[in-house]
Image (cartoon, rainbow, N blue to C red):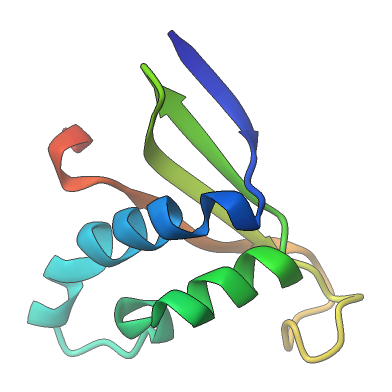
Length: 94
């Protein structure tokens, strides 16, 4: 069964696992991206501040997408909403 829904703080631990595992290979490249090294608390805070959505397959989070909104203080230097984190669990890539 597949379900796509907005995540809540109750999903923070699972979101954090997918975020860290999904972005892990980015450490091999010379890029700077804060989410690569997010702590569990930072992942939880992210869910509280920004709209984060997840795709669940058979009850497990397999990917997520979040948006940065210009009306959230210090959320983005841009005047338009944009995709912030878009990540897929490694075992579901491809």
